[in-house]
Length: 149
Image 1 (cartoon, rainbow, N blue to C red):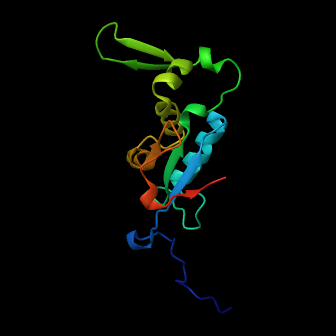
Image 2: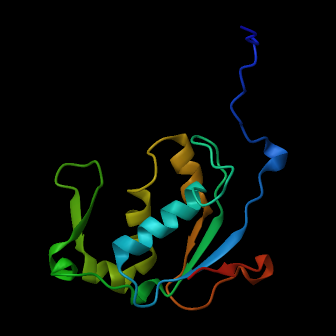
C-alpha cells in the first residue's frame, strides 16, 4: 500500500488584505422587526460570503433606513418593554416599544440586532458597522451602498 503521509490540508483563515467590506442598504419600511434583525445580523457577520470564518470580521457595513416604519405582530407595541438601570437604588427605567419607536426608532433595531450577535469583542466590533436612521435619508451616499431585497 502506497500511502502518503503528512498531506494534511490547512484550514483556510482569511488575511487582513483579503477582506473586503461592502456597504449594504436595507429599507425597513413595512418589514417585521425580528425577520429584519436576522437579515441584518446575517449581513454583519458575513455569513453570506464564501470566505466566512467564525471569529473574523468578514461582514459588510449595513445602513438601515426608515426604521420608524417597522412592523411587529401581536400586542408587542404595548406589552414589550425596554429596560435600563442607572445603578442607583430605584433607578430602573422602562419604556414601551410604542414609545421607543416614537422617541428613538433606531434603538429598537439596534437592540434586536445586538441580541443576535455574539456578546464578546467581535460582537461589539460588528455592531459598530450598523448604521440605523429613522427616515429615508442617510449620510453614506459617498460609499454607494447596494440595496438588499
